[in-house]
Image 1 (tube, rainbow, N blue to C red):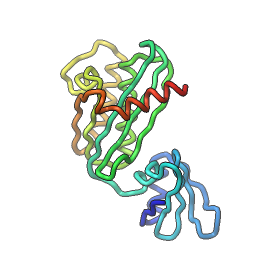
Image 2: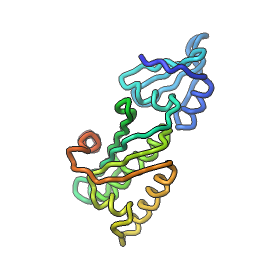
Image 3: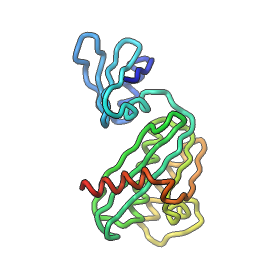
Length: 197
């Protein structure tokens, strides 16, 4: 069970800013409780204890971060267009600090890739990283965002603008195309979401 030494009220604000619901504690010693993903945080005086199957779901939000993260993203569509899903992973020097997946309805593969990238960047921003090195196995999306390729598709242009807005919020960023085997975890998350839809 990780313990984060912190001001519980500042930690509460950080969680609420990230969209996590915070409720009153269950005992006179608990200042508050919050559940996010597969983790529950319980605040006491000067510390927050995190428990559950994936404590990193909350620890990353509670700690004052900054620093650099590697962000991996992948989108999938079965049928193109067809049922779509996204997967993303955020890795720091401490290991995986966050990951997620979700189904996103009927879509094309390219739209799913953009949605995965957007969600990954939003998560990295919530976790408080200053710098991101973003990696994905869609050469098209990477080159469109970097300005090497153009697109005539208005929906993809809108998504590219949104990605650029998110990237500009970081002090430094890079975006690289990588082979699928390097992006394996994000790819697996997207496909698992489709398998369980």
